[in-house]
Every structure is written in structure tokens, then in C-alpha cells.
Length: 218
Image (cartoon, rainbow, N blue to C red):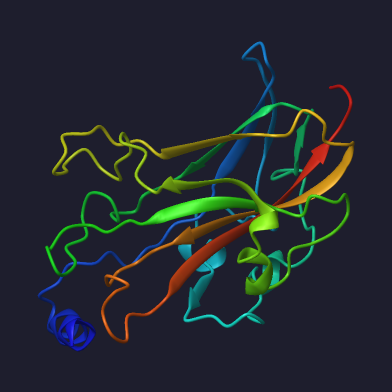
């Protein structure tokens, strides 16, 4: 019932939900001394462009591709290279909340419901996570889940929390014992517009797919 009401109100413009969604814009590798050693991007990154970087999985099945078509292979450029890191490095990723923390007004409380995200990985060098079945496999969880709202980010200075405009920040660590090689990493964001307990509530995910080249030394 709530899903049908939500659909009607959204159509009539009575619920404010931002049109842009979110993806990983840039990543940094930091060594144990706190020095940034590398900057990298998601696969086939074209810049901060919603149409190019957003991959929306609505009510996916176990066989739904986990990455958008343009991110299903390791495609990088000299402008937007693959991230390079060492075992044990801290990886920091930036993404915009695009109003899902500070603007959305969603039922039942007319507040944002930004959800949570996790970092997944193919823990064997050179292998890939390819479908939603891989996302649901707990053995592929690298870090998380984490709140989409990092407690500081905002898409603009004029917001309900009095925050300054800044991207959201996510961090995770590579395992200390990871072997050198190329590892497939997935940022998977679960965006629950409708409370999951409601009948007919959709399951909605967004992903960014990338790789990290792990080396012994930089």
C-alpha cells in the first residue's frame, strides 16, 4: 500500500527525491605513514557525469550483471588510471551524496533514507565478480556495510544539517597478507527508498566497479 501511495505522490510532485544518484569519483591509496601514494578511478571513468557513471539495479535477480556494460572490463586511461596500492594500505574513496542525505523527502517520515553500502572483492588475483549472486556471497565482502551518510557530506551549503558542501568519504584497508596482483573491487550501495517491510517495496542497488593493482613497493 505504501509503495502505491509513494508512486502517486512522486508522480504528483509532492515527494522530493533527487534525480541524480551516486558513484565513486576518485580513490586514494595511503601508506601506514599517512602519505598518499596513488590516485585512481573506477573502470572507464568519464568524469563527474551522471549518465556515464550511474548503474541502477532495480529488483535484480541473481544473474543480473553486477557492473554496467562499460565497466565489465578493465578499461582505464592516462587521465583516469587504475589505483595502485600496497598490502595493508588504507584506501579512501570519494562520492557525492547528491541530495540523498540532505534533500530527499521520502515516506513514511518524509526524511532521507540514504541506506548503506559495502565493499566487495574477488579475493583471488585476476578473477572477477560478475553477477548479483557474487554480491550476495558473504565470502566476497571486503568491508562494510557502512552508512551512506558519513556524517559530514553535503551536496550544497544550504541543507538541513548546517553542513558545508563536501563529498562523502569512505575508507577501507587492504589485507596485510594480500598477494601482488590485480584485484576486482565493487562498491555496492543499497538505496531503500521504501521501507523493506512494506509490500511490493523494490530492491534498489547502485554499483561502481574498479580494480586495484597491488604491488610489493611503490
